Image (cartoon, rainbow, N blue to C red; front, side, top):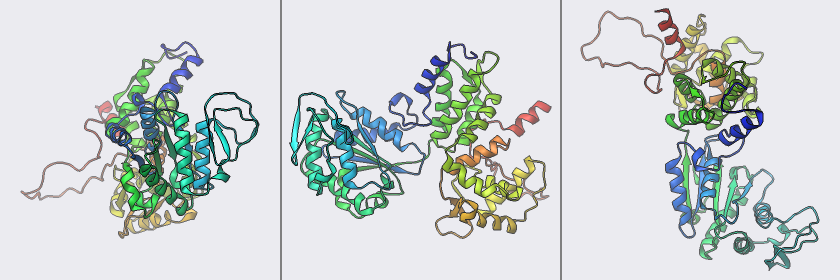
Length: 456
Protein backbone atom coordinates (compact mmCIF):
# COMPACT_ATOMS: atom_id res chain seq x y z
CA UNK A 1 0.00 0.00 0.00
CA UNK A 2 1.48 3.32 -1.13
CA UNK A 3 -0.06 5.56 1.57
CA UNK A 4 1.76 5.09 4.86
CA UNK A 5 -1.22 5.98 7.07
CA UNK A 6 -3.50 3.19 5.76
CA UNK A 7 -2.70 -0.50 6.10
CA UNK A 8 -5.21 -2.03 3.71
CA UNK A 9 -7.98 -1.27 1.26
CA UNK A 10 -10.64 -1.45 3.97
CA UNK A 11 -8.99 1.33 5.96
CA UNK A 12 -8.47 3.35 2.77
CA UNK A 13 -12.12 3.09 1.75
CA UNK A 14 -13.37 3.96 5.23
CA UNK A 15 -11.27 7.11 5.35
CA UNK A 16 -12.05 7.97 1.74
CA UNK A 17 -15.79 7.81 2.32
CA UNK A 18 -15.48 9.87 5.49
CA UNK A 19 -13.56 12.57 3.64
CA UNK A 20 -14.74 12.75 0.01
CA UNK A 21 -18.36 13.14 -1.10
CA UNK A 22 -18.70 13.03 -4.90
CA UNK A 23 -21.94 11.02 -4.87
CA UNK A 24 -23.86 11.89 -1.69
CA UNK A 25 -24.63 15.14 0.16
CA UNK A 26 -22.36 16.30 2.96
CA UNK A 27 -24.11 16.17 6.33
CA UNK A 28 -21.51 17.46 8.78
CA UNK A 29 -20.22 20.96 9.40
CA UNK A 30 -16.55 19.90 9.45
CA UNK A 31 -16.74 18.73 5.83
CA UNK A 32 -18.75 21.66 4.46
CA UNK A 33 -16.29 24.25 3.16
CA UNK A 34 -16.96 27.87 2.26
CA UNK A 35 -20.62 27.99 3.31
CA UNK A 36 -20.33 29.37 6.82
CA UNK A 37 -22.48 32.48 6.29
CA UNK A 38 -25.20 30.59 4.42
CA UNK A 39 -25.26 27.88 7.10
CA UNK A 40 -25.66 30.50 9.81
CA UNK A 41 -28.53 32.08 7.87
CA UNK A 42 -30.29 28.72 7.75
CA UNK A 43 -29.60 28.03 11.43
CA UNK A 44 -31.19 31.30 12.50
CA UNK A 45 -34.14 30.78 10.16
CA UNK A 46 -34.96 27.38 11.61
CA UNK A 47 -34.79 28.75 15.14
CA UNK A 48 -37.59 31.22 14.38
CA UNK A 49 -41.18 30.00 14.99
CA UNK A 50 -43.03 29.25 11.76
CA UNK A 51 -39.96 29.86 9.61
CA UNK A 52 -38.69 27.50 6.92
CA UNK A 53 -35.89 27.73 4.35
CA UNK A 54 -35.33 27.44 0.63
CA UNK A 55 -31.87 26.95 -0.90
CA UNK A 56 -31.77 27.68 -4.61
CA UNK A 57 -29.20 28.23 -7.35
CA UNK A 58 -27.59 26.49 -10.31
CA UNK A 59 -27.15 22.75 -10.50
CA UNK A 60 -24.09 21.37 -8.74
CA UNK A 61 -23.23 24.31 -6.46
CA UNK A 62 -23.86 22.26 -3.30
CA UNK A 63 -27.48 23.02 -2.39
CA UNK A 64 -28.18 19.52 -1.09
CA UNK A 65 -25.05 19.46 1.08
CA UNK A 66 -25.94 22.81 2.64
CA UNK A 67 -29.53 21.75 3.26
CA UNK A 68 -28.62 18.38 4.77
CA UNK A 69 -25.95 19.90 6.99
CA UNK A 70 -28.38 22.54 8.27
CA UNK A 71 -31.01 19.84 8.83
CA UNK A 72 -28.65 17.72 10.92
CA UNK A 73 -27.69 20.78 12.97
CA UNK A 74 -31.31 21.63 13.83
CA UNK A 75 -32.75 18.11 14.08
CA UNK A 76 -32.98 16.89 17.67
CA UNK A 77 -30.80 13.92 18.59
CA UNK A 78 -33.74 11.54 19.11
CA UNK A 79 -34.14 10.99 15.35
CA UNK A 80 -32.62 11.72 11.94
CA UNK A 81 -33.96 14.35 9.53
CA UNK A 82 -36.61 13.19 7.09
CA UNK A 83 -35.36 13.43 3.50
CA UNK A 84 -37.38 13.15 0.29
CA UNK A 85 -36.64 14.09 -3.31
CA UNK A 86 -38.90 15.56 -5.94
CA UNK A 87 -39.37 14.05 -9.38
CA UNK A 88 -41.43 14.66 -12.49
CA UNK A 89 -44.00 12.10 -11.29
CA UNK A 90 -44.40 13.59 -7.82
CA UNK A 91 -47.43 15.50 -6.62
CA UNK A 92 -48.06 17.37 -3.41
CA UNK A 93 -49.99 14.41 -2.04
CA UNK A 94 -47.39 11.80 -2.99
CA UNK A 95 -44.56 13.75 -1.34
CA UNK A 96 -46.49 14.36 1.87
CA UNK A 97 -47.34 10.66 2.09
CA UNK A 98 -43.70 9.73 1.46
CA UNK A 99 -42.72 12.03 4.32
CA UNK A 100 -45.20 10.24 6.57
CA UNK A 101 -43.92 6.78 5.59
CA UNK A 102 -40.34 7.80 6.36
CA UNK A 103 -41.15 9.59 9.58
CA UNK A 104 -43.19 6.72 11.00
CA UNK A 105 -41.20 3.86 9.44
CA UNK A 106 -44.33 2.42 7.83
CA UNK A 107 -44.15 0.05 4.88
CA UNK A 108 -46.36 0.98 1.95
CA UNK A 109 -45.85 -2.31 0.11
CA UNK A 110 -45.15 -5.18 2.46
CA UNK A 111 -46.91 -6.65 5.45
CA UNK A 112 -44.97 -5.95 8.59
CA UNK A 113 -45.28 -6.93 12.22
CA UNK A 114 -43.77 -4.67 14.85
CA UNK A 115 -44.93 -3.94 18.36
CA UNK A 116 -44.11 -0.51 19.75
CA UNK A 117 -45.86 2.00 21.93
CA UNK A 118 -47.24 5.32 20.77
CA UNK A 119 -49.66 5.95 17.92
CA UNK A 120 -52.39 8.23 16.68
CA UNK A 121 -55.59 7.86 14.72
CA UNK A 122 -55.94 9.90 11.55
CA UNK A 123 -58.60 9.65 8.83
CA UNK A 124 -59.61 6.21 9.98
CA UNK A 125 -56.02 4.97 9.99
CA UNK A 126 -54.02 4.08 13.06
CA UNK A 127 -50.51 5.34 12.42
CA UNK A 128 -47.29 5.46 14.33
CA UNK A 129 -45.43 3.01 16.50
CA UNK A 130 -48.01 0.25 16.67
CA UNK A 131 -48.40 -3.24 15.37
CA UNK A 132 -48.88 -3.05 11.60
CA UNK A 133 -50.27 -6.07 9.80
CA UNK A 134 -50.99 -4.69 6.33
CA UNK A 135 -49.85 -1.92 3.97
CA UNK A 136 -51.19 1.55 4.76
CA UNK A 137 -52.38 3.90 1.98
CA UNK A 138 -51.84 7.37 3.38
CA UNK A 139 -52.02 9.25 0.08
CA UNK A 140 -55.63 8.34 -0.51
CA UNK A 141 -56.58 10.09 2.74
CA UNK A 142 -54.95 13.44 1.88
CA UNK A 143 -57.70 15.37 0.12
CA UNK A 144 -56.79 18.96 1.06
CA UNK A 145 -53.86 21.07 2.18
CA UNK A 146 -55.48 21.11 5.61
CA UNK A 147 -55.32 17.32 5.69
CA UNK A 148 -51.60 17.49 4.98
CA UNK A 149 -51.04 20.07 7.71
CA UNK A 150 -52.96 17.96 10.23
CA UNK A 151 -50.99 14.86 9.33
CA UNK A 152 -47.66 16.70 9.68
CA UNK A 153 -48.71 18.03 13.07
CA UNK A 154 -49.39 14.52 14.33
CA UNK A 155 -46.34 12.78 12.88
CA UNK A 156 -44.13 15.61 14.09
CA UNK A 157 -45.10 14.79 17.67
CA UNK A 158 -44.14 11.14 17.23
CA UNK A 159 -41.04 11.57 15.11
CA UNK A 160 -38.86 13.70 17.40
CA UNK A 161 -38.58 16.78 19.56
CA UNK A 162 -37.47 19.01 16.66
CA UNK A 163 -38.29 17.37 13.33
CA UNK A 164 -36.74 18.66 10.08
CA UNK A 165 -37.83 17.66 6.58
CA UNK A 166 -35.54 18.16 3.57
CA UNK A 167 -37.31 18.26 0.20
CA UNK A 168 -34.53 17.97 -2.35
CA UNK A 169 -34.83 18.78 -6.08
CA UNK A 170 -38.12 20.58 -5.53
CA UNK A 171 -37.86 22.10 -9.01
CA UNK A 172 -38.30 18.68 -10.64
CA UNK A 173 -41.96 18.56 -9.60
CA UNK A 174 -43.43 19.17 -13.04
CA UNK A 175 -46.69 20.87 -12.11
CA UNK A 176 -46.45 24.47 -10.95
CA UNK A 177 -49.83 24.06 -9.26
CA UNK A 178 -48.49 21.15 -7.21
CA UNK A 179 -45.45 23.20 -6.16
CA UNK A 180 -47.69 26.10 -5.18
CA UNK A 181 -49.55 23.85 -2.74
CA UNK A 182 -46.41 23.71 -0.61
CA UNK A 183 -46.47 27.50 -0.34
CA UNK A 184 -50.01 27.32 0.98
CA UNK A 185 -49.01 24.49 3.33
CA UNK A 186 -46.22 26.53 4.89
CA UNK A 187 -48.59 29.42 5.56
CA UNK A 188 -51.11 27.09 7.18
CA UNK A 189 -48.39 25.45 9.31
CA UNK A 190 -47.32 28.88 10.52
CA UNK A 191 -50.88 29.88 11.38
CA UNK A 192 -51.38 26.63 13.30
CA UNK A 193 -47.92 26.75 14.95
CA UNK A 194 -47.01 23.28 13.73
CA UNK A 195 -43.50 22.53 15.01
CA UNK A 196 -42.09 20.88 11.89
CA UNK A 197 -39.39 22.54 9.78
CA UNK A 198 -38.97 22.32 6.01
CA UNK A 199 -35.80 22.94 4.00
CA UNK A 200 -36.33 22.92 0.23
CA UNK A 201 -33.69 22.88 -2.48
CA UNK A 202 -34.18 23.63 -6.15
CA UNK A 203 -32.58 24.89 -9.33
CA UNK A 204 -33.81 28.38 -10.12
CA UNK A 205 -32.98 32.05 -10.15
CA UNK A 206 -35.59 33.12 -7.61
CA UNK A 207 -38.43 31.86 -5.41
CA UNK A 208 -40.86 33.08 -8.07
CA UNK A 209 -39.40 30.46 -10.42
CA UNK A 210 -40.08 27.72 -7.89
CA UNK A 211 -43.17 28.71 -5.93
CA UNK A 212 -45.01 31.06 -8.26
CA UNK A 213 -47.15 33.96 -7.14
CA UNK A 214 -47.88 32.96 -3.53
CA UNK A 215 -46.19 36.08 -2.15
CA UNK A 216 -48.01 35.78 1.17
CA UNK A 217 -46.13 32.57 1.94
CA UNK A 218 -42.73 34.20 1.49
CA UNK A 219 -42.73 35.49 5.05
CA UNK A 220 -42.55 31.86 6.17
CA UNK A 221 -39.47 31.28 4.01
CA UNK A 222 -35.88 32.42 4.24
CA UNK A 223 -34.36 32.20 0.76
CA UNK A 224 -30.66 31.40 0.41
CA UNK A 225 -29.23 31.77 -3.07
CA UNK A 226 -26.13 29.63 -3.47
CA UNK A 227 -23.43 30.69 -5.90
CA UNK A 228 -20.33 28.81 -7.00
CA UNK A 229 -17.82 27.97 -4.30
CA UNK A 230 -15.12 30.58 -3.62
CA UNK A 231 -11.45 30.08 -4.44
CA UNK A 232 -10.23 29.36 -0.92
CA UNK A 233 -13.02 26.87 -0.21
CA UNK A 234 -12.24 24.94 -3.40
CA UNK A 235 -8.59 24.71 -2.39
CA UNK A 236 -9.46 23.81 1.21
CA UNK A 237 -11.54 20.80 0.14
CA UNK A 238 -8.57 19.43 -1.79
CA UNK A 239 -6.01 20.23 0.92
CA UNK A 240 -8.06 18.74 3.76
CA UNK A 241 -8.72 15.57 1.78
CA UNK A 242 -4.99 15.06 1.24
CA UNK A 243 -4.13 15.89 4.85
CA UNK A 244 -6.72 13.37 6.11
CA UNK A 245 -4.48 10.69 4.60
CA UNK A 246 -1.29 12.23 5.98
CA UNK A 247 -0.33 13.49 2.53
CA UNK A 248 0.85 16.87 1.33
CA UNK A 249 -0.71 18.42 -1.75
CA UNK A 250 1.38 20.47 -4.15
CA UNK A 251 0.21 24.07 -3.89
CA UNK A 252 -0.01 24.60 -7.64
CA UNK A 253 -1.98 21.38 -8.03
CA UNK A 254 -4.41 22.54 -5.35
CA UNK A 255 -5.03 25.75 -7.25
CA UNK A 256 -5.31 23.92 -10.56
CA UNK A 257 -8.08 21.80 -9.04
CA UNK A 258 -9.74 25.02 -7.83
CA UNK A 259 -9.56 26.50 -11.32
CA UNK A 260 -10.71 23.41 -13.20
CA UNK A 261 -13.66 22.79 -10.87
CA UNK A 262 -15.12 26.21 -11.80
CA UNK A 263 -16.51 26.47 -8.27
CA UNK A 264 -18.55 23.25 -8.36
CA UNK A 265 -17.64 21.11 -5.32
CA UNK A 266 -18.64 17.89 -7.10
CA UNK A 267 -15.65 18.23 -9.41
CA UNK A 268 -13.22 18.89 -6.55
CA UNK A 269 -14.43 15.81 -4.66
CA UNK A 270 -14.35 13.64 -7.79
CA UNK A 271 -10.84 14.68 -8.82
CA UNK A 272 -9.50 14.22 -5.29
CA UNK A 273 -11.12 10.79 -5.05
CA UNK A 274 -9.32 9.66 -8.21
CA UNK A 275 -6.01 11.23 -7.11
CA UNK A 276 -6.14 9.41 -3.80
CA UNK A 277 -6.78 6.12 -5.60
CA UNK A 278 -3.74 6.85 -7.77
CA UNK A 279 -1.65 7.37 -4.65
CA UNK A 280 -3.02 4.29 -2.91
CA UNK A 281 -2.25 2.01 -5.87
CA UNK A 282 1.17 3.52 -6.67
CA UNK A 283 4.25 1.28 -6.65
CA UNK A 284 6.24 3.49 -4.27
CA UNK A 285 5.13 5.13 -1.02
CA UNK A 286 3.58 8.54 -1.73
CA UNK A 287 4.18 11.50 0.55
CA UNK A 288 2.85 14.31 -1.66
CA UNK A 289 0.15 14.44 -4.30
CA UNK A 290 1.76 16.13 -7.28
CA UNK A 291 1.21 16.89 -10.95
CA UNK A 292 1.40 13.24 -12.06
CA UNK A 293 -1.31 12.18 -9.59
CA UNK A 294 -3.39 15.17 -10.65
CA UNK A 295 -3.26 14.48 -14.38
CA UNK A 296 -3.86 10.75 -13.89
CA UNK A 297 -6.76 11.39 -11.53
CA UNK A 298 -8.20 14.05 -13.82
CA UNK A 299 -8.14 11.68 -16.79
CA UNK A 300 -10.03 9.01 -14.85
CA UNK A 301 -12.49 11.61 -13.53
CA UNK A 302 -13.39 12.77 -17.05
CA UNK A 303 -14.29 9.21 -18.01
CA UNK A 304 -16.40 8.58 -14.89
CA UNK A 305 -18.28 11.87 -14.87
CA UNK A 306 -22.08 11.83 -14.70
CA UNK A 307 -23.50 10.79 -18.11
CA UNK A 308 -25.76 13.85 -18.37
CA UNK A 309 -22.62 16.02 -18.40
CA UNK A 310 -20.80 13.92 -20.97
CA UNK A 311 -23.70 13.75 -23.42
CA UNK A 312 -23.85 17.37 -24.67
CA UNK A 313 -20.06 17.58 -24.89
CA UNK A 314 -19.91 14.44 -27.03
CA UNK A 315 -22.66 15.71 -29.30
CA UNK A 316 -20.69 18.91 -29.81
CA UNK A 317 -17.27 17.44 -30.61
CA UNK A 318 -17.55 13.84 -31.79
CA UNK A 319 -17.33 13.41 -35.59
CA UNK A 320 -16.82 17.17 -35.91
CA UNK A 321 -13.89 19.21 -37.25
CA UNK A 322 -11.04 19.38 -34.72
CA UNK A 323 -11.36 23.15 -34.43
CA UNK A 324 -14.84 22.80 -32.94
CA UNK A 325 -13.47 21.19 -29.79
CA UNK A 326 -11.04 24.08 -29.44
CA UNK A 327 -13.97 26.48 -29.79
CA UNK A 328 -15.80 24.60 -27.03
CA UNK A 329 -12.74 24.84 -24.78
CA UNK A 330 -12.50 28.57 -25.40
CA UNK A 331 -16.03 29.07 -24.04
CA UNK A 332 -14.93 27.74 -20.63
CA UNK A 333 -11.94 30.06 -20.28
CA UNK A 334 -11.74 32.70 -17.56
CA UNK A 335 -13.80 32.99 -14.39
CA UNK A 336 -16.89 34.74 -15.75
CA UNK A 337 -19.74 32.44 -16.69
CA UNK A 338 -20.80 34.65 -19.56
CA UNK A 339 -18.77 36.53 -22.14
CA UNK A 340 -18.75 37.87 -25.69
CA UNK A 341 -17.43 36.61 -29.02
CA UNK A 342 -14.34 38.79 -28.87
CA UNK A 343 -13.28 37.37 -25.51
CA UNK A 344 -13.88 33.77 -26.58
CA UNK A 345 -11.98 34.33 -29.82
CA UNK A 346 -9.00 35.60 -27.85
CA UNK A 347 -9.13 32.43 -25.76
CA UNK A 348 -9.25 30.35 -28.95
CA UNK A 349 -6.10 32.09 -30.20
CA UNK A 350 -4.29 31.37 -26.92
CA UNK A 351 -5.33 27.69 -27.05
CA UNK A 352 -4.02 27.37 -30.61
CA UNK A 353 -0.76 28.99 -29.51
CA UNK A 354 -0.39 26.49 -26.67
CA UNK A 355 -0.95 23.65 -29.15
CA UNK A 356 1.58 25.23 -31.56
CA UNK A 357 -0.98 25.27 -34.37
CA UNK A 358 -2.33 28.08 -36.52
CA UNK A 359 -5.60 29.74 -35.47
CA UNK A 360 -7.25 29.08 -38.82
CA UNK A 361 -10.70 30.34 -37.90
CA UNK A 362 -11.38 33.99 -38.57
CA UNK A 363 -13.44 35.77 -35.95
CA UNK A 364 -16.46 35.64 -38.28
CA UNK A 365 -16.08 31.89 -38.80
CA UNK A 366 -15.48 31.45 -35.08
CA UNK A 367 -18.76 33.27 -34.41
CA UNK A 368 -20.53 30.82 -36.72
CA UNK A 369 -19.12 27.95 -34.65
CA UNK A 370 -20.47 29.53 -31.46
CA UNK A 371 -23.92 29.83 -33.00
CA UNK A 372 -23.78 26.14 -33.90
CA UNK A 373 -23.22 25.29 -30.22
CA UNK A 374 -26.68 26.67 -29.44
CA UNK A 375 -28.32 23.98 -31.59
CA UNK A 376 -29.62 20.71 -30.13
CA UNK A 377 -27.69 18.73 -32.74
CA UNK A 378 -24.50 20.22 -31.25
CA UNK A 379 -25.51 19.52 -27.65
CA UNK A 380 -27.21 22.85 -27.02
CA UNK A 381 -24.19 23.82 -24.92
CA UNK A 382 -24.58 27.58 -25.24
CA UNK A 383 -27.43 30.03 -25.04
CA UNK A 384 -27.59 33.77 -25.59
CA UNK A 385 -26.95 35.74 -22.45
CA UNK A 386 -29.63 38.17 -21.28
CA UNK A 387 -30.68 38.95 -24.85
CA UNK A 388 -27.38 40.71 -25.56
CA UNK A 389 -26.14 40.22 -29.15
CA UNK A 390 -22.84 38.34 -29.33
CA UNK A 391 -22.89 37.33 -25.65
CA UNK A 392 -23.16 33.69 -24.56
CA UNK A 393 -23.42 31.63 -21.42
CA UNK A 394 -23.75 27.91 -20.75
CA UNK A 395 -27.23 26.40 -20.89
CA UNK A 396 -26.17 24.16 -17.99
CA UNK A 397 -23.61 26.13 -15.99
CA UNK A 398 -22.18 22.98 -14.44
CA UNK A 399 -21.15 21.69 -17.88
CA UNK A 400 -18.57 24.46 -18.05
CA UNK A 401 -16.49 22.70 -15.38
CA UNK A 402 -16.54 19.46 -17.35
CA UNK A 403 -15.32 21.32 -20.45
CA UNK A 404 -12.46 22.71 -18.37
CA UNK A 405 -11.59 19.21 -17.20
CA UNK A 406 -11.53 17.96 -20.79
CA UNK A 407 -9.20 20.75 -21.85
CA UNK A 408 -6.92 20.19 -18.87
CA UNK A 409 -6.81 16.43 -19.50
CA UNK A 410 -5.51 17.37 -22.96
CA UNK A 411 -2.82 19.53 -21.30
CA UNK A 412 -4.54 22.83 -22.06
CA UNK A 413 -4.75 25.00 -18.95
CA UNK A 414 -7.63 27.46 -19.17
CA UNK A 415 -6.56 30.37 -17.03
CA UNK A 416 -8.05 33.47 -18.64
CA UNK A 417 -4.86 34.44 -20.45
CA UNK A 418 -5.24 36.97 -23.26
CA UNK A 419 -3.38 37.06 -26.61
CA UNK A 420 -0.24 39.19 -26.46
CA UNK A 421 -1.02 42.68 -27.83
CA UNK A 422 0.79 43.94 -30.90
CA UNK A 423 3.85 46.04 -30.16
CA UNK A 424 3.43 49.78 -30.77
CA UNK A 425 6.08 52.45 -31.04
CA UNK A 426 4.16 55.08 -29.09
CA UNK A 427 2.99 54.66 -25.50
CA UNK A 428 0.72 57.48 -24.31
CA UNK A 429 1.78 59.16 -21.12
CA UNK A 430 -1.61 58.62 -19.52
CA UNK A 431 -1.61 54.86 -20.17
CA UNK A 432 -2.70 52.91 -17.12
CA UNK A 433 -0.12 50.58 -15.64
CA UNK A 434 -0.79 46.90 -14.94
CA UNK A 435 -1.63 43.85 -16.97
CA UNK A 436 -4.82 42.15 -17.96
CA UNK A 437 -4.37 38.56 -16.92
CA UNK A 438 -6.23 35.58 -15.56
CA UNK A 439 -8.65 36.06 -12.71
CA UNK A 440 -6.95 33.49 -10.52
CA UNK A 441 -5.23 33.87 -7.14
CA UNK A 442 -1.84 35.55 -7.11
CA UNK A 443 1.23 33.34 -7.39
CA UNK A 444 -0.18 30.44 -9.40
CA UNK A 445 2.31 29.12 -11.93
CA UNK A 446 0.97 27.56 -15.10
CA UNK A 447 2.55 24.99 -17.36
CA UNK A 448 4.01 27.56 -19.77
CA UNK A 449 5.64 29.46 -16.89
CA UNK A 450 7.02 26.28 -15.36
CA UNK A 451 8.50 25.23 -18.68
CA UNK A 452 10.18 28.62 -19.10
CA UNK A 453 11.66 28.52 -15.60
CA UNK A 454 12.99 25.01 -16.19
CA UNK A 455 14.68 26.15 -19.42
CA UNK A 456 16.32 29.04 -17.57
